[in-house]
Every structure is written in structure tokens, then in C-alpha cells.
Length: 347
Ligand code: NAD
Ligand code: DAU
Image (cartoon, rainbow, N blue to C red; front, side, top):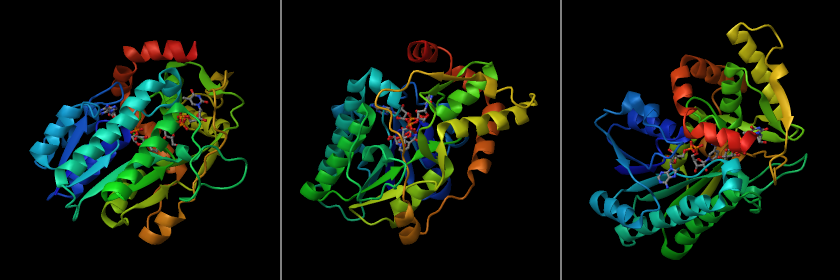
């Protein structure tokens, strides 16, 4: 089986590529990534020479390029993760999100459809999506697979739109698809623009920890390795045309999470108790900031037998250890463009 994984040099994509390359020796995994600021082939050093792995540098918005690689390889399945993924960047430059997340997904869908001429036996288009498409919850309730879409940021609107196109291709052209909507991931190799790695990096550098608004926003957190395992399970056992929510059963208010992170960092760095908490600074809020995301992941749990394998404390501790052991990685990705981004976003 030839599987195209898009965005495989990014955070979640690299964990999915690694899992598939190491587990399924009889599949060939093609990793297509344009290597934006968020893509990094260092994330896949350990498997780059595997005989069942090929990296293809390319942009999903380049229609003729995408059509050509489908003509050459006729992929049996696509696991589509390539995206612009950061909410703050979508507020600064929404069009970039429409181009990659909406148009790029359409180009992939067309290429997949045209390649198989409606002979879709044992074929699959898997769209990796987000819980943000459902909008914001109040203090109570959970997102289920039937919650109406109500996106609030340009990022979530672009992901909602791409979900709709995937479903429309299923209905209109019988393209076999599954969609998963997952909550906030954390773990090794996450680009330090997202809350947890940004704060780890800032603690290491003795910089302010910019908590948006009052810090009382709530997210559900899942260890990235558990997300990759869920994707593997849905890819092999999920029902065609279905959506599955994926979450960690693990809600945290931002400020509580940041305080826990500070405590763990102080312990691991041997700093006096309470030193990192002193770096917390309440800053201007994110426009359109969603108050709370919380996932009901019981469908994937009950139907496919998936559940998170690590506790948040274990996952967070592993994550911090990885960043402490990989300061060169962290320093490389936070030089250059990152400095400009940081200035614009936080100063
Ligand atoms: P990421 O930003 O770390 O990685 C995205 C990858 O896509 C990068 O390697 C980048 O180079 C590549 N890419 C971007 N534009 C491209 C283009 N035009 N052509 C080819 N490649 C391109 O993102 P992530 O956090 O790993 O998220 C991966 C997917 O999972 C996204 O679709 C995102 O919406 C979804 N998701 C993320 C989370 C999360 O918490 N990070 C949660 C739920 C769903
Ligand atoms: O829910 C899934 C989504 O989770 C994914 O689809 C997105 O790709 C991913 O980026 C993430 O979105 P969030 O906006 O929730 O993640 P982020 O890490 O940017 O922010 C988490 C929370 O922390 C959010 O309430 C905003 C807050 N925050 C974030 C940053 C970067 C701060 O208070 N300060 C910050 O500097």
C-alpha cells in the first residue's frame, strides 16, 4: 500500500510518519511537505533512511505538481495533515490559511478522485482536523461528533471549510473519507509558537511568560504520541464517511497549566521553587479567543477501543525532558524568522 502523508515534517505529522514507517514495513510511506517555518526534517532523522520511506518536497497548493505526483505514484490512501496551524498567525494573515487549508485540501481531493476514476476499493482520504471547528463552549458541555460547526478564528474557519469539502467529495463523488477532530496536542518537536513549547523556551531564556487575557481559558490536552496512535487506529478500523473526536479527557485552565509547567521546570532545572512563576505576565488578549474546548471522545473509545496511554503529568514531564535534551533544536528553530514573528506578536 502506498500512503501519502502530507505535513509529515511538522509536529503531529512527524509522529504519524514515524509510527507508520516503523510499524508497517509492507507499506510505503511518502511524506509530502513544503517545509514552511513549521516543517523540519530534523524531526525525522531516525527514520530518514528507512527503505519504506520517501520524502517529497512540495506544496499542496501547487496543482500541477500535486497532479503529477499522483500520476506517478497513484497513492492508495492519503493522510492529510499539512496545514497552517497557528491561530495567532491566522489573525495576522488569514489568506495564507485559506490557500493552504482550503485550496490545498481541494487540490489533494481532486488529485485523489481523478487518480482512481471512481474505483475506490480499499482507498481512503483521511483528513486530520481540529476541535476548534465547533467553536467555543461555556463552562459546561462537551463537543460531540454531532455538535454544529461554529468556527471563530480564520484558522478554525479554514479547517471547518476543508472538513466540509472532504464531506462534499464523499457525498458527490463517493470519495471514501474519514475525519478526526482532535483537541490540543503537546509533546516532542512542537514548534515554540504554541503555548507549552513557547513557555518552556521562555523559561529557559528567563523571558516573560505572556498569558493572554485573564488566563481563565480552558483547553483539553492530548499527548501527541497518543494522537498518532488514534490516527493509526482510525485509518485501519474507522468507518468510511464517519467523524471521530479525539481528546485527552484532560481539561486545564491555561493559568493552572502554566503554573504546573513552571513548577516542573523549576524542579528539573534545580531552580528555587517559585522562580518561573515570577515570569508570568498577563498580556493583551487574543481577538476572538475561544473560552473553552472540551471533547467527548467516547465514540472512538467505545467503538475502536482507543484511549490515552499516558497521564498529563507523565506526558508533560517527557515533553520538558525532550526540550531540555534538545536545546540545539530549540535554538535553531527560534533563530531567524521566529525572532521577527515574536517581536510582531508580543511587543
Ligand atoms: P505544524 O504547523 O507543526 O505542521 C504543519 C506541517 O505542514 C509543516 O511541516 C509544514 O511545513 C507543512 N505545510 C504547511 N503548509 C504546507 C503546504 N502548503 N504544502 C505542504 N506542506 C505544508 O502543524 P501540527 O500542529 O502538526 O498540525 C498538523 C495537523 O493537525 C493540522 O492539519 C492541524 O490543523 C491539525 N491539528 C493540530 C492540533 C494541534 O494541537 N497542534 C490539534 C488538532 C488538529
Ligand atoms: O484545539 C486544537 C488546536 O489547538 C489546534 O487545531 C491548533 O492547531 C493548535 O494551535 C491549538 O490551538 P490553540 O489556539 O488552543 O493553541 P495555542 O497553543 O496557541 O494556545 C493555547 C491556549 O493558550 C489558548 O487559550 C491561547 C493561550 N496562549 C497561547 C499563547 C501562544 C497564551 O495565553 N499565550 C500565548 O503566548
